[in-house]
Length: 87
Image (cartoon, rainbow, N blue to C red; front, side, top):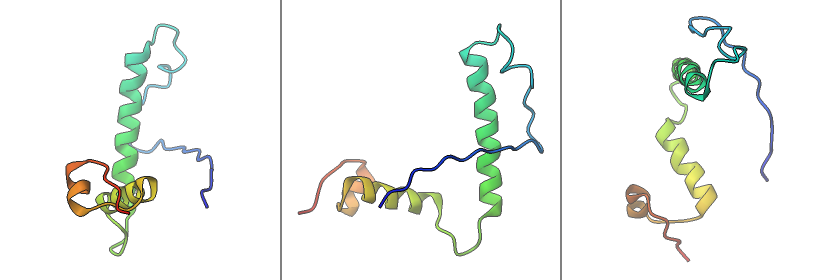
């Protein structure tokens, strides 16, 4: 069963985001993308800092998500980035 949910993050500590960038009419997509890149990087670092010793690594999570999405496959297919179903 898959669940859909919405997460709203309010992270301000230690992130240098200009508050007027999103509101400025002169700010284009590249400027907004750069600001988003900074915020996502800070969020990723924060999440890694908060991880416990027994938690799955991001690589392990990635493999599990791919197996859930594409179904069973071989280890070599995972390493090569190809999709080959096991029947």
